[in-house]
Length: 456
Image (cartoon, rainbow, N blue to C red; front, side, top):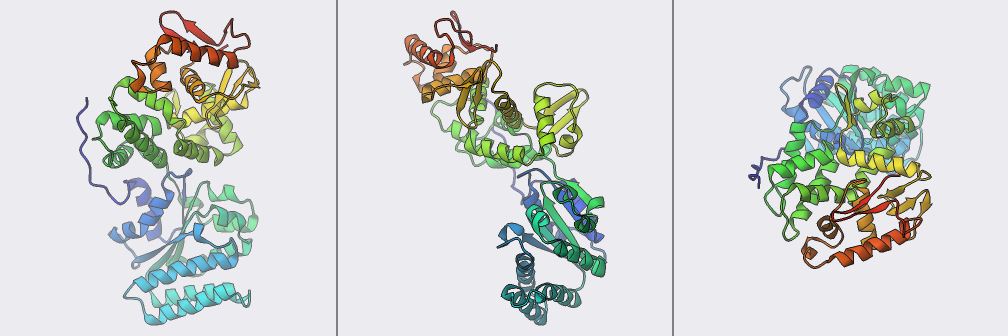
């Protein structure tokens, strides 16, 4: 048994020194910055932490910058009025929390906010927004930095005039005003519009790609999450989590929860076999499936195809550089691999689902359905499905009696389930997946050793 790992002091944000430094440097120079990263990789966490991180930074030329975090998920509707309303709401909150701000400024911002939400005259809405920025920059020294989180939908759907106006305001105030956006994809890919292109040009030289956490930072986050487990976390636990989830924060935390849940099972022992069985179970975890699905659906069709080619072992792959740039694929010499074992497994299953018509047994873990030679098999019982899932996760490998009992019935039944009961379960499964159950060609018996699911 490995020694317990020390519990580190939890910081407010897992260290991303390079990315944070680039954004803070851009803000210090009044440059607009675009933070780009795949779903749940930590863009919102970084953006929320930026105000405090920027205040702690010693380099503040041209006065102190004031960073205002704006969560565009809270926009009541994607419209000019809704966009300005959420900006003014957060700007007013920032001013009211600052004891040094003038009372007159707060009054001016409240008046602008009332004008925007009233919507008596559409012409007055953008005018009130511009007046609020005039009032703020007239009263306050330094730079105003608007941090737009979840900016994807706003960029894609706002009237082009709103984005043109943001560009014009930047041009007017230049060193006094800048924007930082967080999106899943580069801004220029989200909207192909000449007028909006001028707004996107502000960010092109300062795009920061937020990749999955580096090994050291991922290890720190895993230690923090496992420190709250029901049993002391071990170094083996941490290594297992990192191998499964890579540095994707949401996948990593879901894996930590699965490890904690496994440790609550009576008789859990941190052995290689137990970790392998836990790895097989993770693909069916609802939260892990959800995170993998988010990553998958955020990719373009060419990017999805590139991943499918990679897991299929193809040599020449188009669009691979884009996946490397996003941190979804690591390249080291001649080795190319998906950043996470869990996501690689998800991609493999997508490949199988796309080729259901091929011969052999196919299982879609996301839907719980199975096909044989392109035909949907009858509904499986829970025990039959657990057995099939075990064998499918170990194609062409022998699974012995003990592994089958642990996966289907649980470790506590090792001494209670006899060979006859296993044989009956195998027979029932053969009736549903074999074209000729008396002459099986997929679910094979390896005499004296166990069973295996063979590829055609």
